[in-house]
Structure formats: structure tokens, C-alpha cells
Length: 87
Image 1 (tube, helix red, strand yellow):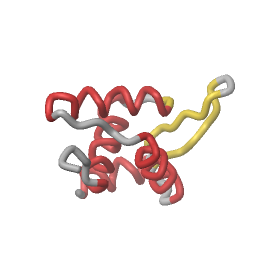
Image 2 (tube, one colour; image 1 turned 90 degrees about the horizontal axis):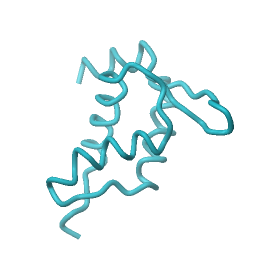
Image 3 (cartoon, one colour; image 1 turned 90 degrees about the vertical axis):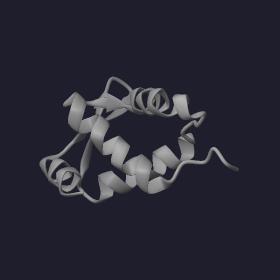
């Protein structure tokens, strides 16, 4: 399918969103931000890929997870910021 996104590009964009916004975000917030970026290209982020990416970034220590009410949220760590700026 032509409108599929490369996982590596989505990873960079996810980190960019967290670095730029400097706050905790829910999955729906991240998905909304990504789709705003990609909709002009006629592309959409697959939610399963996004969940996989967020879980990988969390496991690597680049994001930390916390609860806001009943929802999981994530925030970038110092290591995540360093990793992003080193890309």
C-alpha cells in the first residue's frame, strides 16, 4: 500500500511531538498530532504501530508512563530528549 508510513519516520515524529510539547500526552493526543502531520500527504498513522512504537520507546527509557485518571499517559525523559537531539 502506497500510503503506509515508515516506522523509523514515525518514531522520530513521536519523539519530536513529545520534545516540542514538553508535557504528558495520552495515546489519542499523540495519534491526533501525528495525523495532523501526515494528512496533507494522504497518510494516516496505524494505531497498532503507534502503540508498538510508544511501548518500545518506554522500554528503552525514552518515555515514561503514568496514569491520568484511568488513562495511560507518557512524557519524554531526559534520555529521550538526548536521543532525539542525537538523531
